[in-house]
Length: 423
Picture (tube, one colour):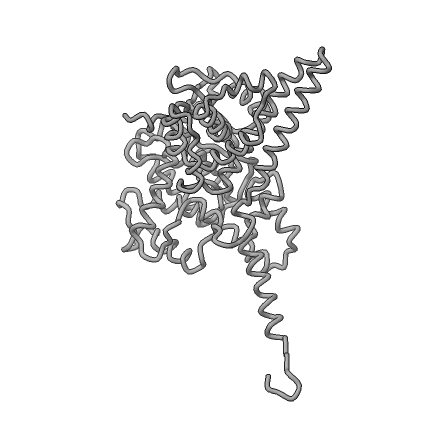
């Protein structure tokens, strides 16, 4: 293995006796967790109720501070404990470094023995999207703010030292804020943004996923299961993790069928490496008669006949082992569909179906004359969001459609004539 292929830091998982999973940022060389990030993620981020997968993502983002420090021969812990922090040029270098892909960042570490900062990477390296760069800088800023606050609190007995440390700290955080907030996130405009499927594509998908459709690309034994998977994603707008976390007991299939999306962090019965998780609020969603019938048929005619499925409560299972279906396999179902079926887009994913549900929901709200304020509140509940800003994010296509309709109507009604001339 070549030197430049080894990442000196990685996120690894631990599991407590109560079943709770916990990510740690560790040194690849020693296998030991880094003290500062471990204290930060446990004392602050975990205490705020962040999901384990969210904590892992934040640690991956924070690892770029340590990758940068390794490449520049800088001791992060010492800088913060001594109140040196980082200079303006160093913060600008950190921000530039956070725009690198991981392999390029590792290559900079491998060449660090030359003690020459590879400034040409600004021009020649491919850069990550601004949103990812902003996420990394946000994690770094949060970590520095929290860790330095702990050191600052220890200086209360020495007012002059406290004042100096606090001034340097404030200036560092302010500069980091400038680098972070100066980035334009992709979703700030509507050019090239991810949206739901067009209506004709949804019709095509619904048709080809039928178990007896001649173009269905799946083996007969998994066609019905995959059919139900697509309908659950498309009809309810749930996330991939929420689909994977559904248990048989969550499905009430009586005269008024419902599916309950529960929050079960660190569920001990979930044996998957990547755990199914509900990111936001739990909720009860109504299901129509047809979907309720299909779920019931999946449970009684298919799942019940797979021996391995009898030892756990999860609804969607592997057809071979009966184990809970991995979340990556849900992605593979979408990949198979988009590659094998003409007319389906290259970006067909579980999350695209969630966008499609939101587009469909907006159309229905327009038909019923529901106000935008009420639409946002209803969407927020059905999607399980805590903040209305999340609901507004999915209004992109609807806002564009509505504004385009107004513009076209204005143009149709505008009658401009030049006096004495033609129209």
